[in-house]
Image (cartoon, rainbow, N blue to C red):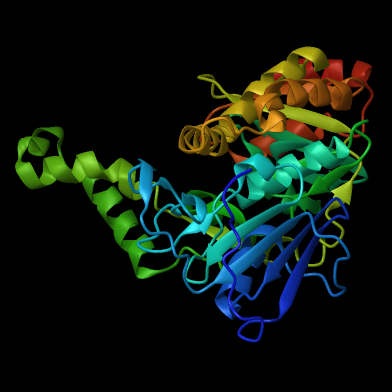
Length: 395
């Protein structure tokens, strides 16, 4: 067993609870949160539910301070062990500690969190893995929507076109299901979008007329866009000089700041209520060097293995922290996490076995209009007709 993780404050100090119900699959309870804590978690996993949960799967207990002296760092500034358990320091947080019992992930898991912490690190990964362990629901980093009665999932590696496809179809009456994470039930008959905000990039917002009022209009965004435009206009020879050389070297990092979190309702309005649907068509996005959008059928078993590798990548942070946990507490391990790759692979094969799946090759950045035109030709069609459309899409 791990050391006691539950440093408690007097019950009278913060006695209220806030519950979150993820489609009846995973329940999350906050104990003693501040208003800022509730807002941060709601941005991650959607609004609280109105009725209390009987048996939450994940409990986040908030305290003002986790007494963790002395700290024994595993990865300096990132993870440590102490009498309070295994400590994780949230990314980009100057202060704040979270204690996560990695040996309990997948079962009843209680996280100890200081109130000054905003987003809870690894919370979404823990929810996804709990759904996998408890219900064999398989998590996919994907966007999902329903268009004219056809459920669509778009997934892949980085820059695979997930959000681009979602935003493209938002202009044509699609119903929102998920923006970043989707859970498929074991037989692949139902898809569940993970509630919460999703990430949107500045270039995406500026290329969608109905989204130009959303976020990304602050002084920092305008300054970065101005610097980017200026450095593109400067003659190449001038970049030998110190300040301009630093500007060019720093622009990639500055461009990565041009994103923001957006509420689905800001884009889809009332077309984002249930966050569920039937996944009829699945697209695996891949960036290629061609300027066209090309679509062709894919083999479910091959795609399942590809997505298992993609999920390994998505779980990199959690699994690296788990390795640090095992280093800090030798002899303690989580058998579920030890076998999670094989479990994901088998679950993906089962969920995708009878699915209509396509490879979606596209340039980056991609034209929303061209992406919509190419994909919609495959929606509401049989595989035979889709095969004909594949020729048309490539033409």
